[in-house]
Image (cartoon, rainbow, N blue to C red):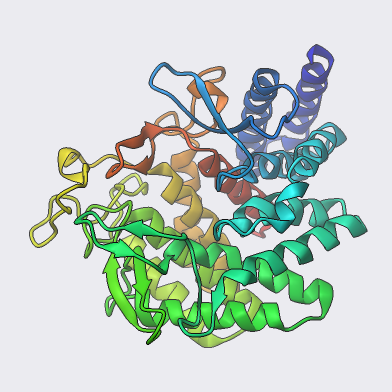
Length: 409
């Protein structure tokens, strides 16, 4: 691993040398240099992929916490490696990305929950984009086939979790969460790769159901909608990770902004562009000065009450969730381009600079070798509070890629 680390260092020095005095190039080079060194330390810690050691977060002792491949997050770390390859053009990162990506192949037939888009498209999707192979294409198509087994004609939606309960104990039998919008990108890819329009049609149908049921009049959002499988109508509108059932969980709103920006890219349907812009505007107008959101936009406000079994009431402190900031930051770079509204780029650059500041970007060798600090997994579950999260790093790196590839100064 020492040789590998030396190669990373050489690659970073070359990146910094080419930055010259251009402020954009210097900013990108400095942050890529940090990300490469920090991720090299992460690789030293994890070793080779075993199917059980995908980085996810950090515990209270400052130690790395990993998961097995059947968690919803294993695709992000291979995705981080692919983005480092894209940012540095160093084949060392490509080779490591391939190894970690290939370890996820068994997931192509997984149907246990809805997050196969995160698991496969963040890994194999980037692999096919940056180093295409026929087998990557086949795995993406097979994974899409697995995902659509969870689609139900009665509800017109892809089921997220098999079961669940709201914080007052009500049982959910067909819960659909806003996060599910992020899994639709793999379905669009599968139609392009296979010519089979079923995947495209299911993605569009699910998105339309989300607009109807998850998005409120002011373009804030419910996190969870549970459907009656007989009538196909919404039986409960609630939260799992937000402050209260009627509040707006910041990362849920972020998934919606990103998801509908992607929907417009893939369909050119103006309905989706309107949703993307309106939900982004809601997000942006509720940000504090440093552009990084509080974990829920309605924490401790009048009219918002946590469920009786939720731990949210214990955390009235307005903790930030940098993961939600990173997701929207990346989405805004694309939204600005698609909507032809440069103001979104201004917001994206300000968010990216905030995420790259000492307030949110870790010091080298700290933070269990994750890049971004001060994220929130689920306060109601008393889980991953003010910790790094692997998906925050993923969308941060994606934002750097989008900034680098843009015409922005």
